[in-house]
Image (cartoon, rainbow, N blue to C red; front, side, top):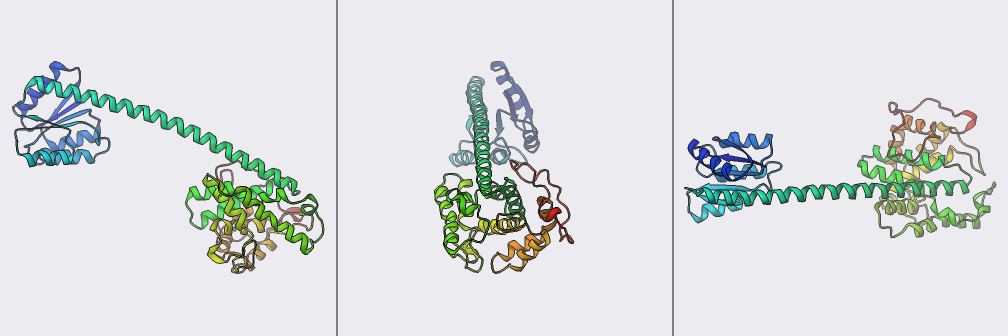
Length: 372
C-alpha cells in the first residue's frame, strides 16, 4: 500500500512519516507543495493521502477538491490534518470529500490506528473492484457468446428461407451489406448500422408461411395470388413482434415496413414518408435493387446500371429520396458488394470489402446478364 503525506512543514512531514512507518509496513512519500502533490497523484496511485489544512498555494480543502476530481481518487481515503476546530471548516472539508480528520498536534498512536483502518478499507475497495472487473468480463463474454449465437441463428434461418424461395443465401448477404452502407451514409451511428446489417436478413421471414407454388411460380401472379403473397409481411411481423432484444425489434420494423412506399402507396399499412421506420426505408432500396439484379422464376436479372436507373427514377415516389441520394453516393461500393456474392455473411461489418472512391461507375455490366 502507498501513502502520501502533504504538509508545508518539513518537521510535520517527518513526524507523520515516522509515526506511520513505526506501526505499518507501507510505502510512504512526502510532499511539501500541494500543487506538486496533485501532479504526483496524477502520475501514480496512492491508497491513503494525508493533507494539512493550512498551506500556501492550496489549502487542504482546495487540495482535496482537486484530488477528488482526478481519475482514480473518487474513493481513495483522504485525511485532513488540522488544528482548526471551526465547525464550518470541517463541514466544508467533508462536503469536498474528506474521509476523516486528525487534530494537530497529533497523537502518533491515533495516527497509526486511523491509517491502519483506512488502509484496510482501501484494500477491501480494491478487492471489490477487482471482483467486479472479473464479473464484468464474465458477463461481457457471456453476452458476446449469446449475441454470436443469435446472429448465427438469424443468418442460417435467413438462408433457409431464401433457399426455399429459390435463392442461395447470397441475396440476403448482399442486401444486408448494401443496407449497412446506406445506413452509414445516412449518418446512423455504428451500433445502429450493425443492428440493421444483422436484422436485414429476416426482412422476408414471413415467406415461410407462403405456399411453395406461389414462391416458385414462373409466370405473373393473379390478383388473388398477389394478395396471398403480400401476406408474408404480416406473417413476418407476427413472428418477430414483441421481441426482447433490440436486434429482433429492428428486424420486426424492417419486415413490416420494407414494402411500404414513400408516397404512401405501399403495403401492408399504406405508410408514407417518415412514418415508415428509417430501417425499413433503407432496406427497401437495398432489397429492390438486389432483386432487380437477380434471376427469379418470373424474370431474368437486370444489368447493374439498368437497376441503378430504376432506383434513381423512383426517388420520392417508391423510395426515400435521402436513401436514394446515399445510394448514388456509395454506388461504386455497392457494385463491389454485388461482385462479392460469395463472401461470408457472418461478419461484424464490411471487413473484406475494398471500398473504392464514391461515384457512379460507367457502364458496369455483370457477366451473363446477372450479378456476381
